[in-house]
Image (cartoon, rainbow, N blue to C red; front, side):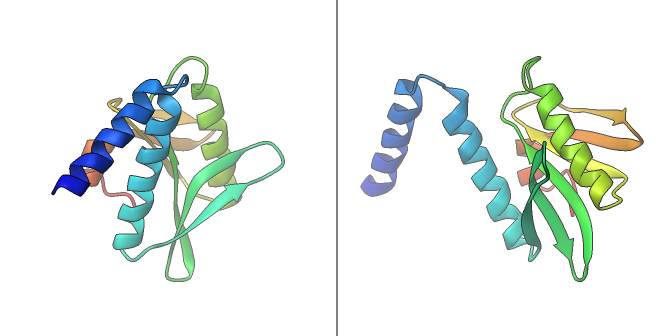
Length: 132
């Protein structure tokens, strides 16, 4: 029990002391989503083309079934980049729906013929958002 608390404390100290506060938290969020996808028995890949990247491409059996971006907090600065990466992956694999997992934001938008579902990470981890 002490060791777990020590790890938590060390992580919190690191996050609070780090000059870019969202970067470490986003890495932790991405790791949580990655582990959740693997626990579901899904095969995941990273996607990158010449201009964009997407955190997770989900393969179910022999078919690519999903694309997921993880972004702790969507802002005016990063929203365009996150959507561009997701759209690029969706277009490459003929996916009609893509997901962005965030801290709290929840909405659905349509861009370039792709439905983008923005889902809070807590909803995803508790199983309320079926992504696969």
